[in-house]
Length: 506
Image 1 (cartoon, rainbow, N blue to C red):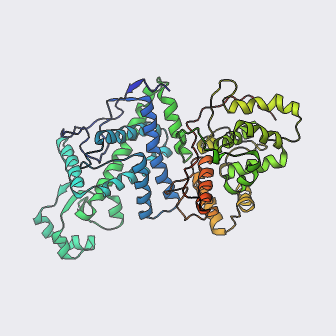
Image 2 (cartoon, helix red, strand yellow):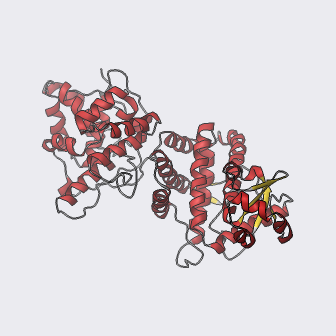
Image 3 (cartoon, one colour):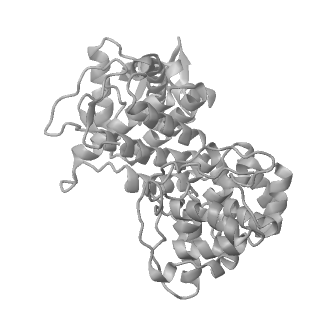
């Protein structure tokens, strides 16, 4: 991708009237994302900003599957947004406020393009985005909330589309008993509350919970519940905007730079994870892995996809092409040098003659290390690639066990390789698999086998998104518990590039 080339982002929905100009281009942290970005952004930022937002949304969705409490969910969102999608308050004078808000604004519209392609993607995107908006709204100051609501009301009034009206003191006094009963509040509190009335369709959750008074199609909402109006408004607008964006998609088909990026993003969301794109090619000498270390390390540190390949390799003394590719790049990623890789694969393929090994396998091992052919330094495969690409056949061993094993075989593997036999644990893992949240199932196995508190994941509540991330965190925990102190995680592979399929065999 040529990061030097840039593309002007075109509008995919009708932009509403602008807000009052201040010294900031984005004067408020909160946004309904009604004005599409019209500036320029490099293709590199286009992709990386969208991926950062997708990481946040993926962890939100994983939290739903894992039944995290509201408090745990807020903690996870804060950790993820601080790391990938920060939005500082206007009082943070040392921060690039416009830069942070531009990234938030642009990344939202990019993901609209990626996730308007199917009803399933739309539904999941809306649910995650509404949750993110709720967190930000609740995290905003009272003054910030009021300023945002005032801006939205001004825009609606200017467009003659006002959807709410303040209840006058006289009307509130006339209806005070009905309001008290409907809101389950003492009359004294009702007298102190401010109310608005909106069409009942704006607050279906409050109507369902019988928390508002209804009259002539209008719901009387107390100030304490008016955030629900804002959340519902955000959801309604986003659902409508996604439908409008879908109609604009054909105009993008001619751009061969954006379509692959959007397809990658949508596939990542369908797989429930997003690929890691951090680079890191250097491995400390103390973290190097030798051929002799693999067997023991596989039992202690490998995720199930790699543990399964190691077991198959021991049993059959051979792996097919895609399995060798998946396992070989993983071993490279955990710190195995090309010299040790030669020793490992030669020893593992013990039933193969030296001549056959040198002719059919030696070149491909060197190729994966960037020493032959195009000399590309290929990274290890992410969970997304393993789950979505090169689906295994009945006689293949590559792939993701949580995605490709039957429930019976998965249960046996959990018990045999990881000693996970508790009915409650197995049930939780299988339920995540049934919901197609394979990364959640893998993360739960990590927590159980490493005595990590439930929902802690591989650190700060994050889910497993890469086999090498699983192995790196496992090794790190071992060193910490052995008294070696905190160690830097092993490098996470950079963006994946497809490796040539040179030696497909049976």
